[in-house]
Amino acid sequence: MAGPQPNIQIQSDPGEWNKAFGPNVFTLYNAASTSANIYYFEIWNYNLSEKLATMRQNRNLAGVAHFDVQKILASNVEPQRGLEATSQLATSGPETLEYHVKAGYISTTDTPVITAESATTYKITMGRKPFHDLNWDETPYVGQYTFVASGLHTISEPAQLLTDWNYSIPKSSLTGGVPSEFSAAAYSQAYVRNIRRDEQWTVSAINRADVSDGSTEVISKLRITSYNGATLVDDITIDNTTANGGGPGRVSPCIYSIQTWPYRILTAQVGPDMLGLSNDITHYYVWFEVSNDVTIIGCTDLNPTTGIYRFDIDNGECNDFTPIQLSWMNSLGFRDYFTFQKRNDNEINVTRDEYYELPGTWSSNTFAINEYDRGRRVFTQSAEETWTLRTGYLTDNEAQYVKNLILSADVNYHIVEANDSTWYAATLETNRWIERTFRKNKLFQLEVTIKVSNNITTQKG
Image (tube, rainbow, N blue to C red; front, side, top):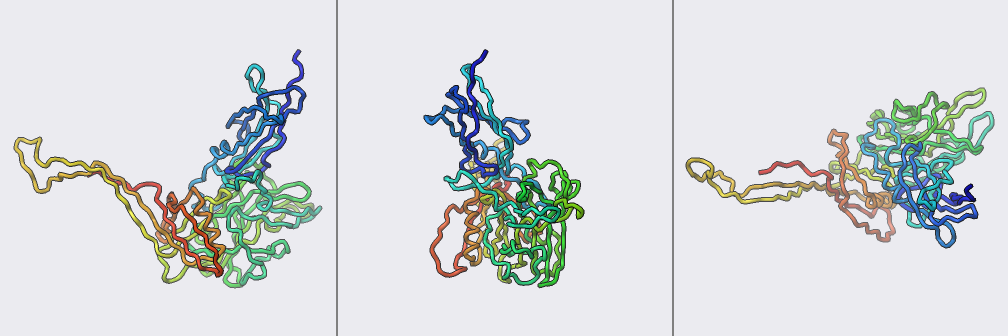
């Protein structure tokens, strides 16, 4: 009969939510008196159908083993292509990962023995964080509600969208129409951006809201209201259904299937023309809502789960150039946008491999040299295309926001006035950011160069 065996357990973890690019450390310890020298660790996908990685490590002098799995997590996420052209809603795909872990030890016969499994899943985004941050607090990105028995839960802290634009102004300073849905005191700040009518723009949000009694809700719909000054013009609702690109498996706003990957985060298209907003609007608001089942009242919408996000229509100045919109992966792993409206330069650099062919009719019965014989010929050639883009004067907040573009490894571009909704992949050539202390706003301009990811197709000579 076998004697006591080691009992390896998880002492600490990176938290339920985290970012893939940065420390993600699990610490294992032995809860039994029987020792084990080599600790063992496995990572599985969200439904335990695929093993993603295995690791083994000697315990340290303190009797524990620390497993930093960030490289494994980072290799299992990548940007979602085509997210900018989302028509209504989109779920989170390859830019997120939901996973289980198992822990154990290596036996004397070199066999893994599992002694612990995670009770719930861990979730990561393709975000980045400082090298010293072990955890990521997702709470600001999850709507918080105060429980009300047999009534509507009240908003206590609205969620932020997954964007690096985190500069807000007091709600009291907003001019023109403001939706009555934001009358609660919790909506004290507003995030305001300018947008051209023909821009494409997406926003992303964690598909969850927390209630103070420990229950959770998921997003039921996207709402958009537009105004001409103080006059309401459009009021649009896009239900969070699989038919509209969202989910999960919603039967009604209060009845839905179990929420797992890829429904943990939702992305929505909020470009004015993409939404079909009226031509005469001056501004509009976008927000996500959740619903809950209330006794007698039934399934009812709660206050918006996301904060006040407003877009002011601004089609630029008469002396602007053809606008080029950039989209990049932000620090949270989703898309941010900026449109460069000043002078842009398009450059094509061609590299040719040449050889010299002796002129003459060498393969014919008679020999002649014609005036049009090539002599020097092109064997192969490649053509790289670059764009140099420039902004107007930026506010301090805009400059800090666009700095995240320089740090991004995934950039796409879109020529806004080309009657083409296609986005093209590019590589950022600008690799330097200089920030100087300044005393006045709008004294910063940015110039960036991007290289089109795919070369222009050319022929041989």
